[in-house]
Amino acid sequence: MKNIKKTLLSSSLILSLVIPSSPSVFASESQENEIQNYQAEAPATPLAENDLSEEDLFHKQVFDQIQLEDEMAKELFTSQEDQLSLENEQLFNEPNELNSKAATQSLTKSFLRSQWNLGASILIAGGYYLSGTFLQHSLADSPSTLIYYHGSNQASSIQYSSEFQKALLLFRNSIPKTSATYYSQNTSFALNANRDQYLALHNVNATFAAQKLSSGAWSIIATVRDRYNFEYWNYSSANGLPGRFVTIVNNYAADNQRLGVVVPYDIYFYINTY
Image (cartoon, rainbow, N blue to C red):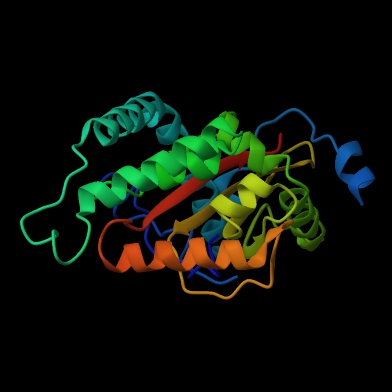
């Protein structure tokens, strides 16, 4: 139900307090058989940093930062999931009532959120885990950034999507056939094949980074990111769902976003392919 996403600002929310001097991986713009048959060699010792060109050093910083953010995402994952469960419990326990002015004007934020939370719970029960979870999280006053480490169910669902695999193949084919030892590139793509991903994320941005090992093989890692928000849009079709219905729900969510009922936030997925 989400429309075109805006490119994120050039800052890493996760590492801003940890390594503020590091350049962000988001600073610059940027079959199937071949994918399945590709198997990267086991990681070997990377080439010496002293031999890197200035361009290689930049791409190395991108590669290293994605790796570090992935490690931090793994460390923070349990506490993040606990927080999501707590938020869900609090939403169900909030009273569904009108404030002093709402009797003649409108439903309160608390009441509206309880209705959205009910819808999110129905989505989760129906197998739309990402859509329901991300919607529930947007019902907090200040929702935190959600980060998913490589190997988590959430990141794996993105990694094995046909759209990510195609983007990965395009990146792999774009790696210069030179003496370069590091390479990185920003891109974007739309998640359409899986309806849950379509409703929860749809258009996403990604950064791919590659490291050439002494064996000659390339190891590739990536971060996929999205701004969870709603924008007014008129859908003629919506991944097999009635376009008119999705338009009504999406634009009603956009109205609620303006009221502060639904609050935008960022989502990151970390993926490595070796």
